[in-house]
Structure formats: C-alpha cells, structure tokens
Length: 90
Ligand SMILES: [Zn+2]
Ligand SMILES: [Zn+2]
Image (cartoon, rainbow, N blue to C red; front, side, top):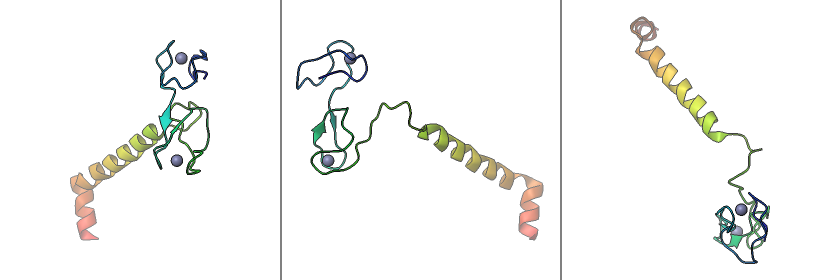
C-alpha cells in the first residue's frame, strides 16, 4: 500500500510507512474498523471517514480561536466600568 505522505510503496497490510513513519492505518471513529487512509467511507458502517491530514480542510482550530477571542472581548467590554454602569442602568 502506498504511503499517503511520501508515496513510498509499503507492503500490503503495513501499519506504518517504513520510509517516513506515517500511520498507514486509521481506525473508524464510529465502529473502530481499521481502514486504508485513502478510503473516503468506512466499508463496515458506511460513515464518512475523517482524513486527519487534509490540507484542503478548513482550519477549525483558528475558527475556534476566533470564537474564543470574540468571547473574551465581550467579557472585556462587560467588565469596563462605564459599560457595566450602562448595562445596569438599562
Ligand atoms: Zn511515507
Ligand atoms: Zn465504521
């Protein structure tokens, strides 16, 4: 099986690439079946397989960080004395 990272042709059933050490087998998060990283769907339960190393995917971490900073800026506004007074008065 080919390594998704370096394209090295490893033996069939290999769990790790012997060229770059990449994981060649990933387990389905739904049923735990080990699948080939090139598969898009689990052949056991049919769930969509999440490709962990996909550069085309949107970066969820940065989105979470944006939400987090929005949350903190809101807290910051609320803790500002004049704004807090305004909120209490209204
Ligand atoms: Zn490799
Ligand atoms: Zn599955």
